[in-house]
Image 1 (cartoon, rainbow, N blue to C red):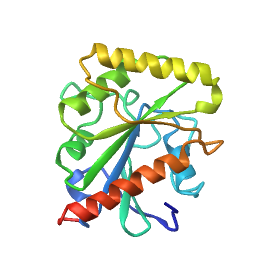
Image 2: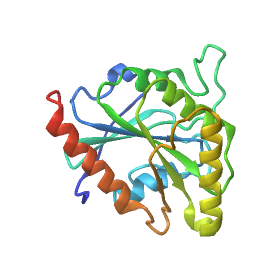
Image 3: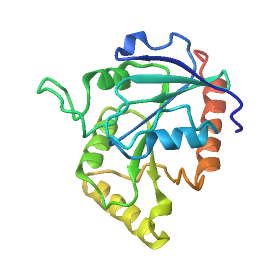
Length: 206
């Protein structure tokens, strides 16, 4: 897939106010400072599309970007940084829960994980929530250029081991990426393109 157009549409904190168009949506989420904005800018060939910052928690809203006029890239706030109230159902903001559990247009979420670190409980917990809620997702390991391939493989193996220990039958599909070196870009876009083709072919709602 070649991205020809990437247009910012709307930001909000209410899932019910997301764009009414029935187009496939792919949501990107991860711990704060995982490199989410840089990854989005890399895959869309637009270094200014998503705002990047060295300060964790920069994204605080649901941000919709229309890609090639036929699907949405959704930039979601990071989890594990912002302080949330006891009323919050999980480890991230309530409106994110509402988005994941009620947004019919969502066809896949991408959970971003910093590959430089060994398996983090907060990432395992978040993915467990996604699995228990039957929300389809893939894993994107970011910042692969920062460590050796041996360590990349070792850390992925550690995630597999911990997920199997948490009753996962198999490891979700995953991608290894680097925003600075454009690693994983083609694989990720090809996957989205394949899913889009299946969605448009098999789902009359789209």
